[in-house]
Image (tube, rainbow, N blue to C red; front, side, top):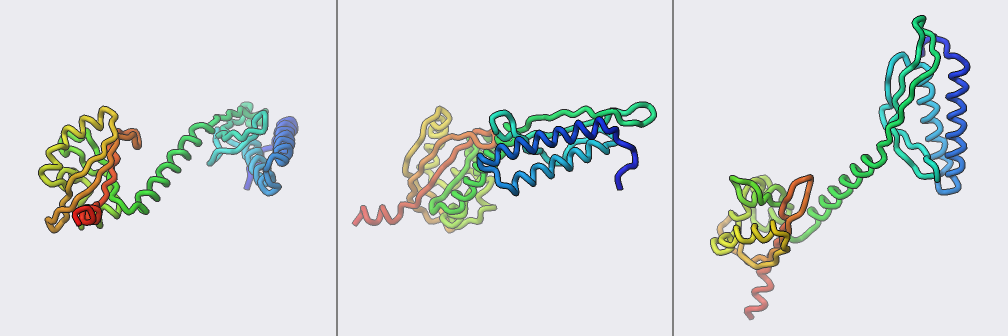
Length: 239
């Protein structure tokens, strides 16, 4: 139940006037694509916020950001926070309201989420082995920090075993011998394409074609490597 404290008419009138302006803004935007259901949802949200403001006993903020319409009909995501203004007798005389614009930070978060989801889908669907490698690990050069299912199948090792290994442990001696030079070139910004040989869990070797480049992922500089089993290509070439 709401507190019984009486809300001055002046405050209620001001809040409802703000809601009326919001309704007009949303109605104007309806011609630009907002559905009637969306307009009603937003207005209800503002009404709920206004009700919380009118009965607030202490400083508070909404649980989630609120979509408002800025000049020109551009949506902005804001986080309202307010505090009641009361006199020593506890009578409400108004409220201090602050709106923190979180549009850009939320857009950045959404962009990161979309990139991660795209990477997850591509990683899962690729027929080639995909690795993310840490070229700066001082103890395990080119440590594997991500490997897709194709990499696991290709090498006969569960993904859990691959993670934490150096990619050089999957190379034969000749391919691994070029590792330090390739790391230097990758860190200088080159995209490398080369052929080598990898070792399966049973010890057998098979030829691979590798495309690798250093990228930024999650604030870290990592090497993205795509390894393709070219056993069949080699067999055709040898015939």
